[in-house]
Structure formats: C-alpha cells, structure tokens
Picture 1 (spheres, helix red, strand yellow):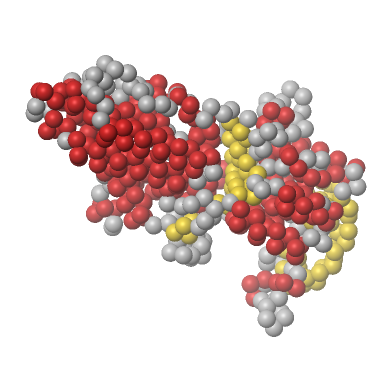
Picture 2: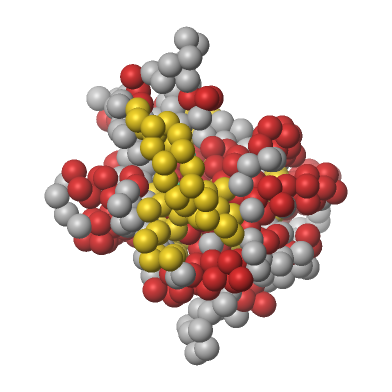
Length: 524
Ligand code: MSP
C-alpha cells in the first residue's frame, strides 16, 4: 500500500496557491501510483486547533468551533474544484482524533516519557509565547515586534525529546531516503546539532489557550497544537482506533515494505516533522523501518518574496481556476517548479506554458492525429503499410519519453516527467511535418503510407492521454473518448506498449481540448 499524506492546513485563513500546490502535487502522485498499479491511500485535511485560530475567531467575534467549520469549508470547496481526490480527510476537532491523541499522551505518561515542570522566563503578551535569548536583537533587547514582554513562571508538560535525539541522528545517517530531496536532510542534521539537548513543551495552560485537546490526566492543560496536528498522520490511518471504527486498518496502511510518504513544505521540516514527529514516533515504539519518508517541497514566491497578507501579494487559486481553467492551473503548479526547490509564481509563465506545451504542441498533435484521420481515412486507423526508419524513431522516442516519465515520477519529480512527454509530442509534430500526410493524401499510391503515418500520430495521442492523466484527468478523459477508447484510462503502466489502438479501429469526432489562453484578455 502506498500511503501518502500532505501537511494539514491551518484554518485561520483562506487557502492560497502554496496550499493548492501541495495538494495538487499529492493528488498527481497518488493518481500516478494508481496508474502504476499500486494500492494507494491519500490523506489530507485541516489543522483546526491552536492559538492562531482562537485569536482570529475572537477578532471575528465567533466561537472557534463555528469559525473553523467556516474556514474548513473553503479548503473542502477548493479541493473539490481542483479535482483533488483524497481517500481520507483529517480534521483535528474530530472526536476520533482527539481520542487517539489522548491515548498516546496517556501511554507516554505511563512510560515515563512526560514530566511536568515550572518554567520561568520572558513571555511576549502580544505573540503569546516564551522568548529565548535568540529572540533578542543586537543590543540585547526584545524588539518592538514582541510587544509587552513580562517575566512569568508557568507549569507545563514536557516530552523527553532529548532522550531520542541520539537515535534520530543515527537514523538520519543510516537511512538514505529519510528526507527527500537529499539536500534538505543536511539542513535537518545541522539543526539537530544545535537542538539536541532540549525537551519539548507539549501543553498550554487553559488560562492561556482553551482551544485544544485536553490533557487526559491533567484537565487544566490542553495539548500544544503541533503535538496534536502531527498525530493526524496516524490517527486518521486507524492507529489505536476504537473497535468498529470506520477508519482504515492501520497495519495495512503503515507498512515497512512501502514506508508512508509525508509531503510537507520546507518551513515545517525543522523542527516539527524532522525532529518532533520522528522522535514522537520513536517514543511510541515505531521502528526505523517504519519511519515515514519526508518529501519536502519548496515554496511558491512572488517576485522573489514570500506571499503574505501584510505584503498583499497572496495569489488566490480560486480566481486562477475560474479565469484559466482548473487544468491550466494544475499543469502550471506541478510543471513550473522542481520538487524540493522554490519557484516564482508568474502568470505570464502559466499562460506561456499552457499555450506552448498544451495548446500548440499537444493541441497540434491531437488535431493532426484526429482531424486528419477523420478527413483522410474516415477515422479508420489501419496498419497495412510497411514501417520506415522514421516510424521506428518515433516509436523509440515514445519508449524513451515513457521511461524518463516513469523514472521522474518515481522520484516525485513531476516537472521532469511532463517535460519528457512534451519531448515526444514535439517529436511527433516534427514527424508530421516531414511525412506531410496532407501531401500523401493527394497520391492514391501512398494510401498505405498515409495510414501508417496517421496511425503513429494517433497511437502517440493514446499514450499521451494515459501519461497525462494524473495531472490533467479531465483532458485525458476527453482525448481518450475522442479516440473512441475511454477504457484507455483504466490501463496500468505495464500495459503501455506500442499498439494500444488496434488495426481497423475507428476513432471518434475530434474537438479541441486545449483552447489557447488569449493574453490580451488576461493582461488587464
Ligand atoms: N498546520 C501546519 C502543518 C501541520 S502538519 C501536521 C501548517 N499549515 S500551513 O497552512 O501554514 O501550511 C500548510 C502547508 O502549505 C505546509 O506544508 C506549507 O509548507 C505549505 N505552504 C505554505 N505556503 C507555501 C508556499 N508559498 N508555497 C508552497 N507551499 C507552501 O504549516
């Protein structure tokens, strides 16, 4: 079983293209793994507790429960619109999740992994957090961003994180795919060097924060939001689920032979996932071979800057989908970024990539394959002609692109996979221009040659529709149905050999699938 999760999004605001990218990436990878023939479980959801939610709800004058219901809906609607098809949906206010967090806390407490301690220190009233010397400015003061800073003493519950960091170092050293891509692991190892002596405060006193999961053995405290949120990956996978619950069977999802993959952004690798989560799992008794793989993606920035409310540069995926279409947005989000690295969101590139790779190149190929077959051979594909060197080279190009696509997708690099498809499409268009079916048509003696050329183009479209289906499910379905083979999308990767379309197969009526985006209209 391939168990894939994303980070769960904070519900203190609205989704932006960063959130959308992560969920589309996960959706594409889940669909690809199904195409490979794997059994897949894809979990995503929302992070509904914590200080930020409580504060935003207060500002808006509603109780946090009403507030998170409202914001959660925005995420649910967007995923539906973007055709993100998940198998499990995580909401941290779910009673089943709460029960799991509480069961874990109780066990850790019984095993002596938790302790209660008073901490005295500088506390920012505005940011509602304890400050350390690292938060002081060059002159040794706490800057104005912290607002009023007071000294307080507070009791809290701690998790003995420091007892697991030696193990974590060793685990990271010995496990090549613990963090992907590899360069992200170096950041984690460095952070661990600086961080290994401290324990993790996992509670908040109720006077300070009410909106959280209550400690089962100390009701004056609620659980720190990260400790609660990270557990979603196992609670919604059925870990310690009640008898008869509808949650999945944990032992089937969380397996050593195909370790789970958590897709997360680079900002939440250190310390949350790379340190806290792996140590929490270790404390719960998970073995090295049961540790999840962390697939860390980069960020979408705007003109080199972080997207933020204060800069007013947040890009709304709903607007983009309405304006350019869901599939143009899906394509851009996974095509113009290399998994792991950052990228600059650029509307002109969205339009350019759609127009060149889909509307022009692929659109042209489909038009040639389908339209010319309709016009020149009544839509019937035949294989009676001899195969030339050019035909064999085209078949070779398809085989190479398919192999490259597969290797790239297996490495979670969707952009490279899409570029591999594009290379074959460009090859096909070059082939069509050299073979000139429109000229062959004029000479009845070339009827067999004409049929062979059109066959090669149509067969390529058939393969492309299958390969593109994880990214562009709707366009792929349209192409398959125009080829009169809707069942193409039930094929598995292993079925993709030359000859998907049979001798004598009649294709359907062609209709443009990728209408050009007209730049004049969009550049207001
Ligand atoms: N709630 C926590 C995650 C808890 S997981 C147990 C959180 N939420 S978030 O809403 O701030 O971010 C959700 C995901 O979106 C994270 O993986 C984050 O890295 C990702 N992104 C947020 N902004 C992003 C971009 N600008 N670009 C790409 N991904 C970004 O963190």
